[in-house]
Image (cartoon, rainbow, N blue to C red; front, side, top):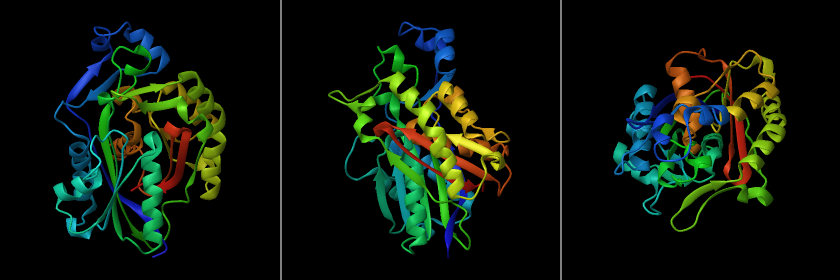
Length: 312
């Protein structure tokens, strides 16, 4: 095999929904303020006993069922998350146990919001190297556990959920080369730290970095895959904020692409946002099978990673 491909997708969101009107009851904000600044209407909130690994397992089970593979076929599990509370067993091992996988390599990857695209690249590399044949790649977050509900600049942003992909060996490379990196000197612009652990960010710093620096990097992702931005059928950016997604997508030059805007209904779900949004687009058949789609995520650590995939 000379490459890998996305075989199937799945996603999961908790049943609890928090609207802007609900938020207005607990913090000084309102629907107009939130929508004008971040474009979000609703976000899903996990129940107190609903864990990151439980949500990851739900999304992974759907992706596995859609792939036509058996549990014993999976030999690698990668979970991108920054909100798992336990160090061991890691989230990937718990997902593997819940799904009855036989003996996979199981690793968590913490690159915050760009975790899924980092994990997807890692799975692609493992498959190309012959270390794996079928991988489950999952992004899952319970971000509402780490938000400060008294801070209206951050609590309006976040939601919970999970998205998953089955990635398999392929005769041709249908997942393009990754372009990834970070700006470690500016890593403190997004933080999840302290006791109790809380999410905080320098919003204007992140906004300026994302809207000015990332479009050129995203165009490089397309160039490495031999795709012109105008030929993209879809663009799935990290669902951080509609005020970032729309100008970045425009500056990439993907004039004919469907641009994912799942942030409006799901909020910022960090590492879950790209697979969650992509899975919904595929489920609604908004992008044809085999069409090129740019996946590009960015955020915590001021890290970024992207690749062009062919839609399953």
